[in-house]
Image (cartoon, rainbow, N blue to C red; front, side, top):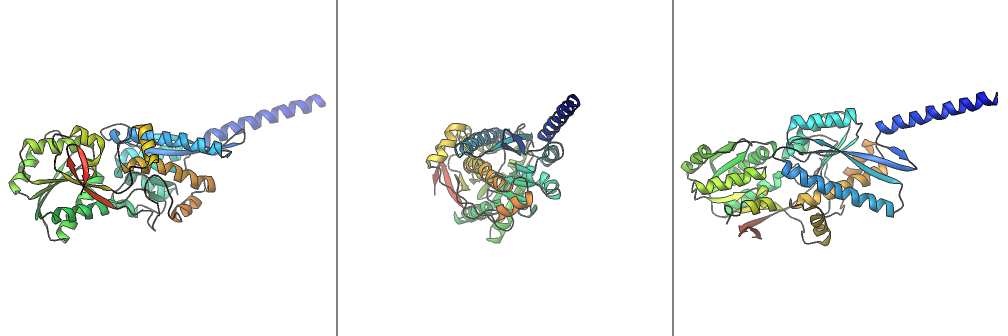
Amino acid sequence: MKKNLFTILIMLFLVTACTTTQVATKSKEIIVTGTKVYKIGLILPLTGDASIYGMPAQKVIQKSLEDLNKKLKVENKNIKFELVFEDGRCNPKDALTAAQTLINLKDIKVIFGGFCSGETLGAAPFAEENKIIMLSPGSTSPEITNAGDYIFRNIGSDEYQAVVAAKKILGEGNKKIAVLSENTDYAQALREKFKEEIKKLGGEIVADEVVNSNERDIRIQLIKIKTANPDALYLNAQNIRVAIMFAKQITEQTISAQLFGNEAFTFGDTLKKGKNYLEGMITQKAHFDETTEEFKYVQEETGCELGIYCASIYDGVFLLAEKMEKCGEDTDCIKKELYNTKGWKGLMQEITFDDNGDILVQYDSFRVVDGELVKI
């Protein structure tokens, strides 16, 4: 009888162990020697042209995770966070597939991303339907404002960038404006808002050309712009390669209009690689203090040259972790906590979410002088 009881206990132990293992591989809340392990899904452009954003973003995220887990350990908290990466390739279709993989196959409840606006717009309806939290550190399209109740971003809408750019261009005495845009969700949303503001403020759009991201020769579009004889030309690119191509071929076509650029022309790689073509350009970027020791630390540790995006990426991981530490995987609780976030301090400005899950970001204007940005 004792032998039979012992056998039964052993069998129960084995069943329990197997059950625990199965739960651990499926759920993001894993109990390992008393430590809760939460997983956060990531959607980034890890391949393709936009990987020039996705790869540095991945480095910053990994660094923030490392610093976060060290902080939790020092505080003697039995919590640990892990990341699950999926490639959104900066387009809606691949981002939707990435979201479906994270949610359906990997049981993820919280997604950091997408980075590109197209990624977030593609994945948001599925996330919203399944009550999955999405927090984007890089999607700036105005369309994301109404993307869903579970969709947030800790970066500003391009609505602000478009308004500042339009006011600056017209304020410089220009009346006839040409626009050259890349054909991406981000650039097209910014294009529409920019044109709207130019017209509202009394300017005239005399040329409006759109270029696919994979094009290498834009002479036809530039001839149309040159023929329109604009006072100013607004360059609206998303990918750094495309931004440099725009500036280079404009120089080769000897278009004399004053050049203005969107925030893609403020990134370190754009300024370095396009130095010979960007002199005198006026551009805008979101306002925040890049001189703090904390921000310099992140830049030095990761090599990130994406400006405020380096900060929003680093901050976003800590922000989500803080809410998950309080709510676990209860996405309704996390959603409530995010909406109630007021004056949260990170590397960038204080974060306060409005009723649409957006934050307010101010933009400053700069002139490119010898490959450097000079505030004006």
